[in-house]
Image (cartoon, rainbow, N blue to C red; front, side, top):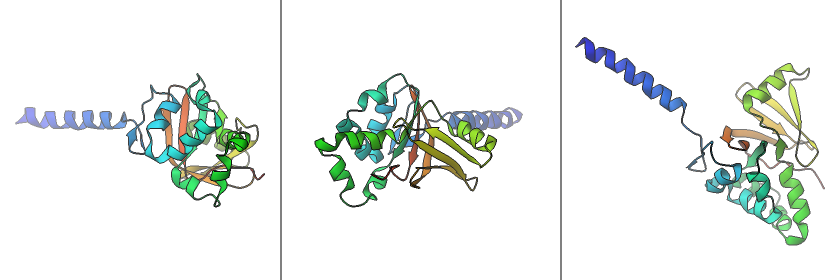
Length: 184
């Protein structure tokens, strides 16, 4: 009987350790840290609009390059919530540069995990972290009531982190609920 009692804690500890190592699921698919950002987001059912825009803007190489980069990846719903006609207009070939600019505003150089961002926020005087987007303008990050992080554009668009720290071979993805844009 004593043998069986010792066996139960070993199973529980093993289960907890394996559960902690589980990869995040985004859009119904497991995101693998050995995949590039492009490969992982291409599998997500929640990022088909984002990936269509990436292809239309010619940014596929950016998301499979060595990096590291951080992507604040808006969901399909985030794109659907944009003002009517915005994405249709941006997806036209003649607006490729505007589309590219908008998408690069949702990306930053470097691998910014939530721990890195929280540390930067904590060290700041105003409880914010500023990072430069690949588009060139700044993004501001804040801790939202200690529950999760949010990213804010210079024009006050705010995206809440839905899924954080999707580690990829060339950076990290944070799934957000809004599209970061600068007013034209």
